Length: 281
Image (cartoon, rainbow, N blue to C red; front, side, top):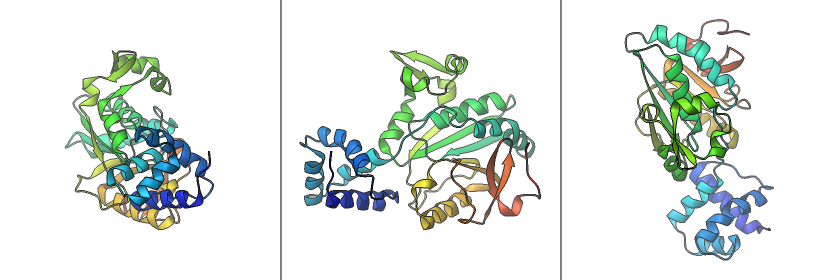
């Protein structure tokens, strides 16, 4: 496969405008591999033919298909484990003390992909919160296709094999053909919305915990700074922000302070963080 420099520049420019994701030179093979199924579905003979048609006759729906195809949707259940352990061991006990009046917790899965992260969060909270407490998880993603899939709550056997313990599968899912479907008791606590983190955000109620994991790595520094600034406005003053292992607010947005939480780290609005760290080690 070989993508011309002009076609790659067109795709990179489109993706940058629509999602702020930076596609650097060297990603030509990835772009062609991701767009080949899109081109075939559109009836084009090749990716080059498909992109040539888009450049001659711009089509917003087709542009969205291109962006969806190039949005990285790598995910698994309880990905990296430690953030979920931190939620159980440190964050939930803290929230139980500070949210005792409301007995309610709100969490944002800000790049939910096909749904494994928000449903993993739902399982974690259902197990960790005391009886009588409520939780709400708001899951968003830039990809309309991913939101559709996540909202359906149906997963293949291969997908549930990626990190979902058998006991949790049995407890929180029901058989659906050859795959599995999220049980209603879990699904009713999760809402889904298509949302571009780099665009002006819609009105949302504030959150106690935000998972913004493995997203910032695709943005330049100014975009990271803008996203974190908007995220901070929706995080409660004593809330918790979890990023991916390769991501940090340090040197990007000093409004956050990194704190140790168990065997991982989280970020909290600087004005509310006491001296020292939380959790073990």
